Image 1: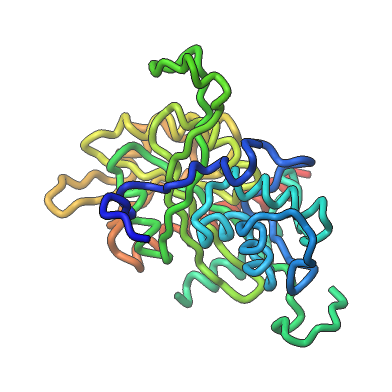
Image 2: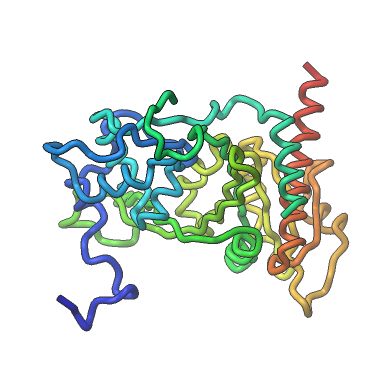
Length: 121
Length: 198
């Protein structure tokens, strides 16, 4: 079915939080922007009451992927992705790897590697 | 991970990701800079409606707490295990809450300055100074523009001694990359000094 009046400029047809049943905060903790997500299963087990977006996340997270990258790739709002990730984590379908604590200083060797990497660009 | 499935590539190690914020006033070249050094993509985030302070009438939609805002983000892959994320911070003051999350654990920030409207970058500088986030000031030099010496810009902005000021063209990939190198080297210098004091 095509609609003449629907295109990219018109914006999404489904409001962002419809996918989360109106929930705006994940069930447990927050997910850092640069936390990495990895799917624990290649395919979703049947019988789970999950949305197409949940499936899309699991598929995209087969290789480790950051939260921000997921949001951008799937064209979902960051908050929506976080709620869905909360569901998936509760269901044991993803593992989450948080970045080191913000209070920790950055490793000087890592900084050197970044400088060298940038020089090589 | 002790995955026994073979279709997952390699060992699936979790990369280290570092955040760098690109801040500055409206039109200072944030989007241009993120785009010139990385593959830029839009990211939908949220703006929290505060209701009481907002000009918009929220009666009837009291249950609606958020609305989406798009910001720029880019990724530079240094190695398979090391990724650099650039975030163009949303310009308007009402998005400050997004900055808090962005600056959490960030490596540092680049404050873009436009010498025609130097005051536009004051809020960014104040913000990073207060949070103790290391930053460099990068003066985006548009072609026809009068150039100022970096020292003059540092004085005009009343920067702490040691805060690097560089002149560059945000459209130039090498120049933009050099600004990032300047920032990372500055962060490393600060870290070594801090370690020496301990």
